[in-house]
Length: 362
Image 1 (cartoon, helix red, strand yellow):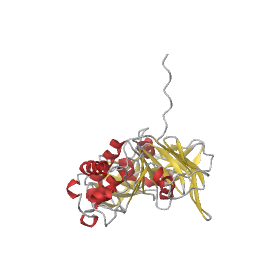
Image 2 (image 1 turned 90 degrees about the vertical axis):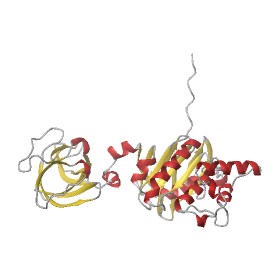
Image 3 (image 1 turned 180 degrees about the vertical axis):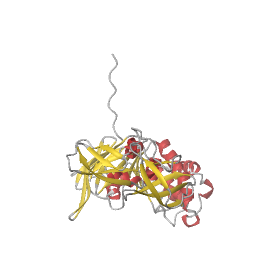
Image 4 (image 1 turned 90 degrees about the horizontal axis):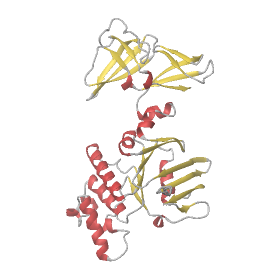
């Protein structure tokens, strides 16, 4: 009989981390686990506690309560505090923090220990991997933003950290460079087997990079999951709105149903008289192009068509934003691929797929 495999130990295990500054609770009971080679994004608006969480994990800020474990070893709790250099954790920040008086090779070598030949070999290996071998003797001021970012990445990877903490490291890059450098960075980190905790306030960046997203608000993690699950099954209205524009139609629950211009929506568990919002994204609004004068036949999946007048339409490059006003006076925005610029006042019929709507208590 084969013995059962031992349970895997997370590379990074954060348990019930909290931190206050005076009366303000900046981080409130945050827990995270990240396996080797995985990328988790702490996503949320500015001031929600993301960077403070990162600094506590790095060891440059002390928590009020909670524990931090790396590869199953306790590095910090109420009594024990392993200093930053002893945690096996690498750090990357948005300003890169390169030493201006050191060459590219000197920056990458900073923090390495051991024989000179071993350090030189490690520096050469990393500079070749980030395609900067030809700039080894250059100084940071002579580099572009993308080149500086790659130097910072090579320096952070040089000691072979178990965990890589990244605080909005791509925010200073030109948009044209950002996607390629993010992909290169991810490839390097996965090859190194490091667990990555990335702080960002950009949903697109989190969706692009993360295996798991931890959505933060007011110091707490309000939802955790794979990007697809976070996007399609949001915990509340604010979670929907953080990833995109939203349309919201208010109603009142009666018999676990809410009446709207788009038909009735189920709202189970809501007592009669409870105010609810039906929330859906602009890209999920369907426009009936074939029968502008009369409503299409309703379907169970799309509900009741609602008559709407075009208020304005704008072309955004690869898609068009069209604002409508329903007969009930409710404004609804639709996102349409390619060019669609109907004149103001044009009548259309709109539907919203039931499986793309979210019902929340107000």
